[in-house]
Length: 173
Image 1 (cartoon, rainbow, N blue to C red):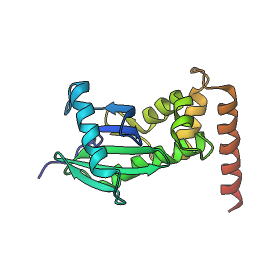
Image 2 (image 1 turned 120 degrees about the vertical axis):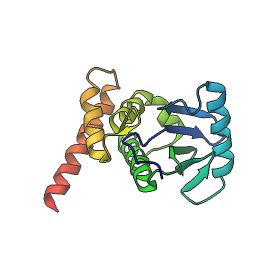
Image 3 (image 1 turned 120 degrees about the horizontal axis):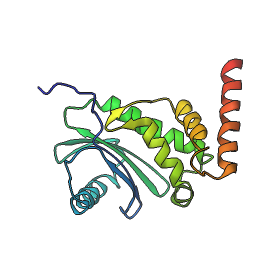
């Protein structure tokens, strides 16, 4: 059996409800060209958009996914990858975006906050290595890095405010 490696994530994808790419980051050259990537994306969309399950095996890869309103989130790893690790990445990404978008995780809100999405994915996965699975940490770091990337001022303030409230609640528990 293959050795588990640190490089667990092959790709992070977000597609809309027509299966079109809104965001895609591939961490290796399983699909070296955009044409091959898009064909793969269409294939996983067709296989997953009508099902309620969360895990698929496709083209020798493990695909974990989740849909919300008009978005489909996918995290892809090799076939011998631990689904729980991939699921942790998926949930972390979704929960981070959910906080950053004020629970409004849908296409329009996402498109208005693409830089936040890029930063969040970079905090969670770097070069295929999982760095973080705690959405609070991700949101916090994105807010800090928002100083060098012009996220709208309001978003950063909202994120910090929501982080402060979360901290307050965790202290009260």
